[in-house]
Amino acid sequence: MGNKWPEFRLDEITTLIVDCPHSTPEWTDSGVIVLRSNNIRNGALDLATPSFTTEEGYLERIKRAIPSEEDIVLTREAPMGEVCIIPKGIKCCLGQRMVLIRADKSQVIPEYLLYVMQSSYIQHQISWNEGTGTTVSNIRIPNIKALKIPLPKITIQRTIVSNLLVIDKKIAINTGINQTLEQMSQTLFKSWFVDFDPVVDNALDAGNPIPEALQSRAELRQKVRNSTDFKPLPAEIRSLFPSEFEETELGWVPKGWTLKSVAKSININPSIKLPKNKIAKYVDMKSLPTQGYSISDIIEKPYSGGAKFQNNDTLFARITPCLENGKTGFVDFLDEKETAFGSTEFIVMRGTPQVHYLYVACLARESNFRLHAIQNMVGSSGRQRVQNSCFDSFYIAIPTPAVMSLFSGKVSSYFDKMYFCNLENKSLTTLRDTLLPKLISGELSLDDLPDLTTDTEAA
Image (tube, rainbow, N blue to C red):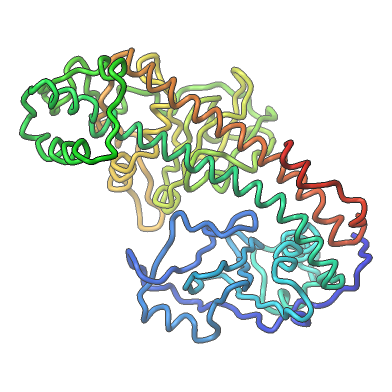
């Protein structure tokens, strides 16, 4: 890339480039946040699944430097070259294989440095070993310090940043909308099929007895019903649910519903044909989200083995630590009957005529189901996996067709909105990634920029 702007070594425009401690932190369930490589993706810090250490562990890990607002964090390996900026109001330390970079604000705006570090120009420098002419799997501190950074005047940096921020803010809004829709889907699933709230409501209103095994659940529900902001379901919806429970060999279930193992209720790793070497879409483990359902970074390559799947399937990570980190995705990017493939460490979950595919997608994110899978992993430490037999011993309540249809109809509207938000985000990301190298090289004049506010609102 030919640059219009002068270039400087990274260590010439920063006040700090510090490697993290190489030791593993003492992990805790709460405390001070430890930034890990899985928290950094596409230029953003994602703390949906945070890790923690003790105050003592934090103090040990900040001896070289205290991470501060507007510092840049760079991952050195696995994955290499991911960057984020530390936001205001967060107390944190770095995990392993990470580098802390502090901009000299008299020369470079931190947000500009964040964007330029994401550009293909810098990413190529990170991944390419100039000495051997080969790609590398990790980057050393001397190489980080020597990165060549195109640096326009501060005023131009501000203009570049302000234009790119317009795009990123719209992406963030769409992401927030999707998080809300995902939560609505999960809340409805848990209410209807885990806690049986409509059935408990009907039983309480009818004066029907609540089984002793469900008494605590009924008491919690009664407290919700007594609250001032309680809104009961419409009568036409409640009429689809029974008003009593019946006991089966496996436990209590709403009357008229069935209790079956996951293995007998849905298709696990369904048989699909895909010829060897056929060019098909491919999803790697890193492409699965740790929250939500949107699968990113889909590529095409010849089929050589791995999990095969089709639209409306759910991909469930079976190996540690991917399962514990929440990696799960919903397939919505294929044409009808098109087959794609992915990591051998995916479990493919598919709906049936009795169990809608969106019920399956929500089940894959349900906390009890995930805990069951985690507790039933087998194998040596560090390489534990979920076996298909795990699904023989987890039971789900399958409602009547009317309730299943009502649920799928409601959740389908949420997933449709998520799909279009994801589609818009992909378009916005492409726009940003197209503009970024041209802006930092000076190839694109700032006067030639479209009105991004108008363009992104219309996207």
